[in-house]
Every structure is written in C-alpha cells, then in structure tokens.
Length: 136
Image (cartoon, rainbow, N blue to C red):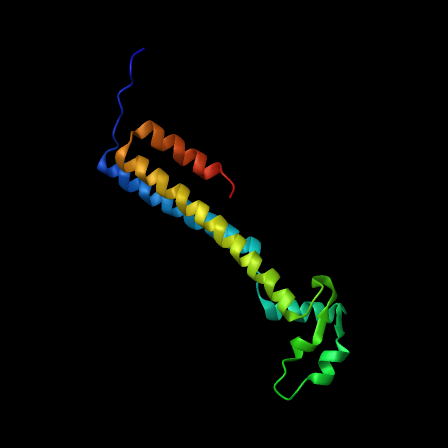
C-alpha cells in the first residue's frame, strides 16, 4: 500500500482558511446566541410569568417582608415551582448550556486550524466542510 503524500497549503490558502473558519465560527456562535436569546433575561421571564398569571404571593414570606425585601422574593412562580431563585437557577443553566455549545464550536475550530497549519490541504478542506455542516 502506497502512502499518500500530504499536500501543504500555500500561504494564501492558509490565510483564506483562517478567514473562512472565523466567519463560520462567528455565524455558529451567533446562531447559538439567537437560540437562547430572551431565555436568559430574568427580568423578562418574571414579567412574562406575572402577565400570564402564573405567579402567586407567598403569604408567609409576605408577612416577614421588610422594606428592603425584593418583590420577587415573595412571589411563587408556578411554572418554575419556586421563587425568583428557582427561575434564576433555570436561567443560569440555560446560559451554561449555551456556553458549553459555544466552547465546542471554538474547540472544533482550533482542531481545524491545527490541521490547516500542520497538516495537508485535502484533510483541512474536508474538516472545513464538516465544520460548516455540523450542528452544535
């Protein structure tokens, strides 16, 4: 079996691949941000839940409330089965999920850049095509 010789990329090809990878990464990260947009704003979620009537006053907490008590702390959000802290935990989880997905995009891009700089043109092109089509 004959070993295929690697074809290195020219300087112009490397520059193009780097530029193209950056464009794809930015688009993929933007898509992830759009997907999570509006899901991580605590104020918007609280407003939406109040307007939808999915909020109840917690009498025990209301009785103990002082003049420094946040209104959200005396409300029970039925959809989230808890107070504002429960809603905040959901928001934090969503934000973390988005960051993990964005990190996977960045890691994949780094692998491809390594291949571009150290590997051969055919493999780098295949990896770029796969990266473009891949969902994160």
